[in-house]
Length: 507
Image 1: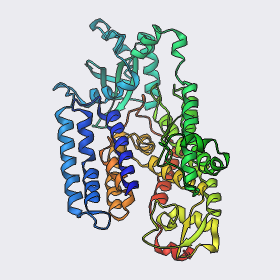
Image 2: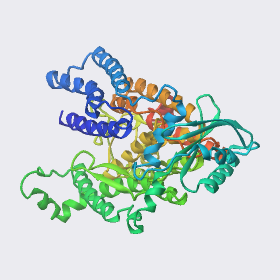
Image 3: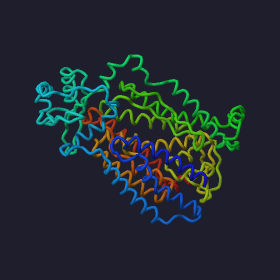
Image 4: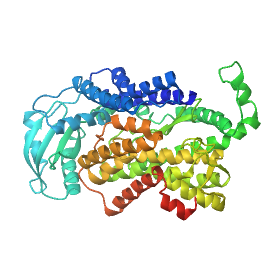
């Protein structure tokens, strides 16, 4: 019971941060109201559990009806407060304005828009043999140039970008997108970031990474994950809110040593994941922060880690490479840690009531195809059809690494998987794939209840991903194959082991 309400607290915090980041700049509806609507199904289930206990499951109609009503109410509230564009605004202006927070984090200083006398200069930037301009639309947020593409997209973007910079300097950021009608168009967004940097001292411009803050969060997370690791290792700790209890725990090296395997394993996986993003972004000369860990003194000991990119992504190739680098780097580290941890785990009798997906003391390896294969590889004949796993702390960290990899690879919105399918198939197709993925995960959660909360979060996560500057040029075959392999990795992590394969593995 206590674990459920702790999970509800974490879900509520994560949902609030998600709503604040994704829709606060798009709608005037208060964030707290949208958050409350999103959390209503979970709150109803929690209230039922509080009143009737876990032995009496809630009626399915309660969850389904609340989910339907809250989805409809969320959409109505979102649209009611949406910052509506003018009647003549097209999807290009909408997409350009959604890109503004990345390219234009502040509105000062203002940048002079194109004047009527400059339109000839603008048209001269578009050679008819490269991109024949048919219409120029002037919007408050952008200048939209529509026409016919007459050469390869990559060549067109590079040549026109060079022409724009020659005529207008760094006044504009050039975006090349594919419209909802399938035709590519150019957008010139005022580059207020460049204007701001001109008026900012150089030593202030370089204060981006904040290594002191990153180190402080790293040390704090090491402490919180170590304390959680101590409990995973089977050592009872006094309540941390008692006077002097935390200092007593931290001053006992023997106790702390037992929590380090879990702490170091989990932090290595999360850190390498974010370093994959960070180093790849640096290779493309994209300004980004160092990885920041998020410590919490309970649950897993951390909410994970993150980096922030402060400049736009140049093209879909860079978007793909940066997005896939994190999950792959984290997975490469997860594999040896998980195999070693499984080899040092104990095999216990399988009891269906206790062998839950997230129970490290009696984990059924058949809940995941990949986990089952790795468990059989590590334990061999010790693992049978009637066996569950009492995980070693390192195996717990490795198992969480698998979960983190799978959640990040979900092809929805601004998750790594959403970026990957966006880079592979384009924005329009990625939105359709994200919608299908959300529905499939919701259906899977009817069979695998541990995915229910994640399915709810994904259901309300925006499907639209920020476009790259050149969002038209497609990937090469090598990256397409890599993206398909990443989606295959997601499938073998989240799907249960088929009985036919279980019989073959004798588990």
